[in-house]
Figure: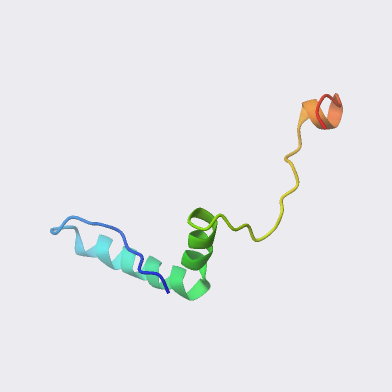
Length: 64
């Protein structure tokens, strides 16, 4: 597990801190943080994506 957090002001609203803590706990539980770390820090992709639909590619045939 990788330490992950958000910097908030020392006198931040307690409701905001509760929200961020809940979000971080949920993200850890669902594997979101690990997935984001692997994508942004390690450059790993879970799947190879097809190119987005494009008029130049799909209609006019300009691109391969």
